[in-house]
Length: 389
Ligand SMILES: NC(=O)c1ccc[n+]([C@@H]2O[C@H](COP(=O)([O-])OP(=O)(O)OC[C@H]3O[C@@H](n4cnc5c(N)ncnc54)[C@H](O)[C@@H]3O)[C@@H](O)[C@H]2O)c1
Ligand SMILES: [Zn+2]
Ligand SMILES: [Zn+2]
Image (cartoon, rainbow, N blue to C red):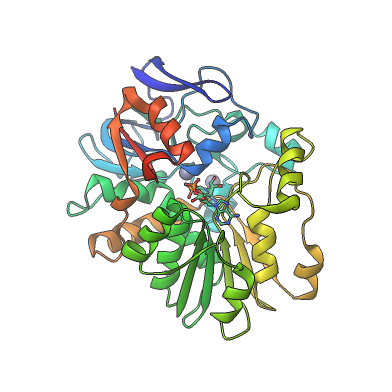
């Protein structure tokens, strides 16, 4: 079958790989109908997560049709249209029982790398390097889905492919940020990043009752999407003093909840940014935490910061003093998709959550290398590139 393969830093090609086969009794094989790029893939592409091997198949957000089921699969049959959580979880371990699905003890078949890096291994993910299990990704004609009764969900008939696709990762991630960030009715919420993840976090905050939601980015086309499709307020950080403006819009206190949806390749300005970039390029620090610093600084006393953006290792100039003295709570996580996808699909069916505007570019899988180039460069106002195998 055809698949998009990583061939080295910033090198992608569509090639032939073996068809996937059922391996365990709980597996299904899905014929991919739609698969989409994610900001997380850019970190792999750029070599910031150094556990890719030549030939690895990329992609972790997808929707498709079930074409084969293992003998122990109960919830799916051949012909079903399913959307699949990007993180792979067994549904039975202690972490899955706590609904901390991305922390599953059995989802990552290759835990040694992250155990060494982080002390413990989180779960596995499709198409996300050998640190996350080395599972073949979804930018392919077919994919094997382990623990399918836990991670794959039938899509209601009234929800289109284009909308349901984003339940796989971006919408679930955004929802988690607002939920575990502790958004309550009446809160003021600030979201850094107006990509797919930030937009979904903003919508989740609104649906959870936030009084004001403000999304920060520098790309006007994305901020326009936020105003038009999400219904949140916006701030362009290149033209505004973010901290002052957020204070102004939150009765002088600062936002109650700050959600960071930018990640390790954040943009910024001034000498501090130049220093971060240089250190990252020399591999003296792995991540540029520009938006995390800003969020901790802007957050109201006693508020919370939730880190959705992906970080791999170590950061410099972390504002621990602000965090400690202001009593700020900080959390982060990879997304617990299995916990949110059914609810998200219901909301999509009711029209409360729309996502299809994120798919600014739709193209055949053959054009995926070009799709990634446009997505990476944010060319032609690209927010997400969707591939149709
Ligand atoms: N936690 C999870 O499970 C999970 C899941 C999906 C994605 N992610 C991560 O979330 C992050 C965002 O993903 P995405 O797909 O929306 O990415 P994206 O690249 O499409 O969007 C990131 C946005 O952040 C903006 N940005 C850059 N620097 C900024 C700054 N200093 N302040 C404010 N905005 C800034 C960019 O202009 C861009 O619009 C990535 O790091 C991705 O890896 C995490
Ligand atoms: Zn993703
Ligand atoms: Zn588990």
